[in-house]
Length: 351
Ligand code: SF4
Ligand code: SF4
Image (cartoon, rainbow, N blue to C red; front, side):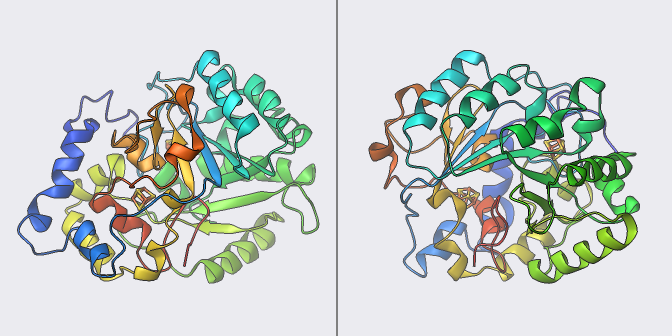
C-alpha cells in the first residue's frame, strides 16, 4: 500500500485535468457508455439545479495521518493545504447567517488543522442544528495531544461521523493501512465510554462504510445490521447509523481502478446501476462545499476535480445564498457514483 499521496509521488493523476480527461475520453467518448449529461437528460433532469442550501460542508485541510487506498481527497501526512484562521473567520461569518441546518467539517483529518479547536468552539456558538465532524478515528489515538478529542467533541455537542470500512481487521487494514482497525476500535470504545453512539444518547456517532474494492456497496440497512451485530458481539461497541457510500472514480480510487485494470468494468457497473430516482436528491442539490482556501464547489468531489461552482459567487468571502440557489450544478462522469443503486452521499443513500 502506498504511503504517499499522488501529489507527493508526482503522479499524473494528481492533476485534476488528467482525471477529467480520463472520465471524458475512452468509453464515454466513443459512445460505448452514455455521458452523465445525456443520461440525466433522458428524464429531463439536465441541468441539475441547486435547491435551498441545507448543508454547508467545509474542508479545512488535506493533511491526514492516513493514506487510504481509496481516498478521493488524495490526503496524507505530506499534504500541506490547510485552512487559515482568516478563511475560517470568513466561514464563521457565513455560518452565523446561513439558513443551513447542518455544518459538516471534513478533511483530510480536520483535527490536524492547528486552528481546528478554535474553529469548532466558535462554530458551535452559532447553534446550528447538526454539527458534524468527520473523524477518521485513528487520529484520536495518533498522538497524546489528540487523546482528549472525545471529551472535546462532547463538550461542543459535535456529531461524530467516522469511517469504518469493515468490522474485520483484514478488510479495514487493507484499505486504510496496517494498525488502523485496532486504533479505530480503541477510539470507538472511548467514544462509547462517554456516551457517544449509545442507544438513547443525544451524542451522535455514525459510521461510514465504503467498499474495499471495485464493487458497489450492498444494501445500507442490512449492512448496518451486520455491522451492529459484529461490533457489539466482538467488542461491545455501539453506534447509531451506518452510511453506505459508493467510491467515486476520482483521485486515488481512480488510480486504483486503473492500476488493477478495473476502470472500465467499474464504470459499466455504475452506469448499469444508474437510478434516475436518485438524481433528484444527489447531495449537490442541497449542499455547498468550501475548500481549504475558501473557494466554493457543488460537492467535495468537484472540489478535488477543481470544478468550481457555476456562479458569480466563487469564494466564501463573497457568499450570497440567494445568488447561489438555482445555480446549474457542474457534472461529469464521476457523478454516476452518486446515482448508482440507492444513490450515495456523505449521509449515505439518497433514494
Ligand atoms: S479517506 Fe479519510 S482517513 Fe483516509 S486518507 Fe483520505 S481523508 Fe484520510
Ligand atoms: S459528484 Fe458532486 S456534482 Fe456530481 S452528482 Fe455527486 S454530488 Fe452532484
